[in-house]
Amino acid sequence: MSVDSISRERWGIVGGGMLGMTLAYRLAQQGRDVTLFEAADHCGGLASAWSLGDVVWDRHYHVILRSDRFLRSLLGELDLEKEIRWTTTKTGFFTEGHLHSLSNAWEFLRFPALNLWDKTRLAVTILHAAHLKDWQGLEHIRVDEWLRRWSGKRATEKIWIPLLRAKLSENYTKASAAFIWAIIQRMYGARRSTRRVEEFGYVPGGYARILDRFATALVEAGVRVRPRSRVKQLRALNGGVRVALDDGHVEMVDRCIVTAAAPQAERLCEGLNQDERARMRGITYQGVVCASLLLKQPLSEFYITNITDSNIPFTAVIEMSALVDRSLLNGKTLVYLPKYVVPDSPWFEKDEAEIRECFFEGIKKIHPSFGPEQVEAFRVSRVRYVLPISTLGYSEGVPNKKSSVPGLYIVNSAHILNGTLNVNETVQLAEQSIKEMLSAGQAVSIENAGYEIKKTLRQSVA
Ligand SMILES: Cc1cc2nc3c(=O)[nH]c(=O)nc-3n(C[C@H](O)[C@H](O)[C@H](O)COP(=O)(O)OP(=O)(O)OC[C@H]3O[C@@H](n4cnc5c(N)ncnc54)[C@H](O)[C@@H]3O)c2cc1C
Image 1 (tube, helix red, strand yellow):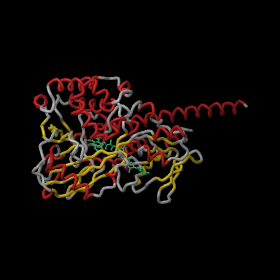
Image 2 (image 1 turned 30 degrees about the vertical axis):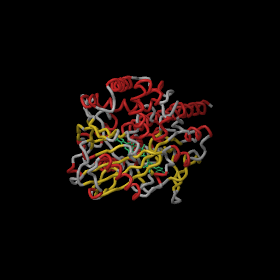
Image 3 (image 1 turned 90 degrees about the horizontal axis):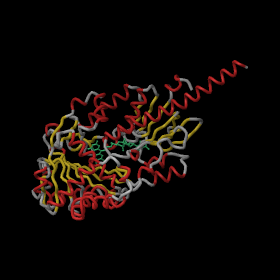
Image 4 (image 1 turned 45 degrees about the vertical axis):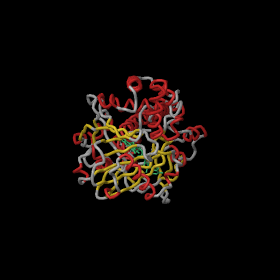
């Protein structure tokens, strides 16, 4: 294969989330002929935006951290990095029926739910995890076991387990200590780069603006962006990959990368071997039912309120307008109420009215002055496969990115091994994967080129 034919290689990318978009962008910049297939009518996936009343903002809450090196670099290429607005935020904690501010060390010392000894052990746990490098060692210890060892029984039962349950529901019993390690690393790393204050950033216009600019950059780089193109089946054919869409349309590419979640990717790809299928089925996912509310007035001063009370039906309260300038939200308050659930949870079948009633009761328990008359708009997003949980021995069970089907790669958030799910990790995964795929491709073509040269020499000698 000559250098010319490498550069004309046709690549298909299935999934136009931030991962698929970054992969497509880099491949096109390297001269490949790229088509991006996205099932929805717009790109962005989990990071996409929607309309809530008269406001357009992210469907799921998104913040940028100062330590988000890969994302910030990409935003720099899109000429948006310099527009990021950074805000110091406050954190609330709702426990045992009371809302507390937990935004600094002094408030932590006064926090009544734990005694001084428990607080010391909690602080030591966080410091220990923040400085620990061997995350692979943590993959073999259950998260609750590890937390009991470091924080003691009381702090674990009162704080850690309710927080783990809120994020992972009963799946928390399957998670390894690497799960909490990754969260602490991200949050501690962010504080380290901001002189120990909690500071988050956003681009004015939110992800709608980022995705709009990114989509333009893709088109300018030569990527064919194909929204409303749900891929139904992928299989190897005549040295390439046959891409069949739901609408009956068929296309041939030389190589294809699937970025959909493992259970979806497994259904699409024909010809995977037993081991690959078992590895993909072995990944435990957590889904989310996430309500967005547009309110006439603020609920609190906190960007995030963590919740340990099990009678509150959602995981946390995220008050986006405590971070984002309210003038960008038409003067309104934007609140998210995420509930993390297993993919087959009955919560996915509940209609919006039922969720609304249940969530409103929950807000009232935290903020007694809240009433439905304050709500201008309410919408619910439901996604079954969001977060691959770092279970015991996780990294040993992850399938290879390069599948056994020639020309077919499967890369998704399950390949984020030592980090939490966030756009920075997603962009980093794309950059890393492109390097691996292209260098492997070059090696193959150099081998082929060597064979061609030898063949030509033999022919000319003969
Ligand atoms: C509630 C919530 C809060 C978050 N908060 C933050 C945050 O504060 N900061 C942060 O950095 N990150 C945050 N994230 C994480 C961030 O959204 C993800 O890391 C990122 O969007 C993942 O991108 P992806 O492309 O890997 O996956 P996805 O966004 O899931 O993209 C996959 C795409 O594939 C498409 N697809 C699937 N099947 C097919 C098919 N058969 N054919 C064609 N297309 C298909 C889907 O439609 C989708 O667009 C949050 C996520 C959630 C859910």
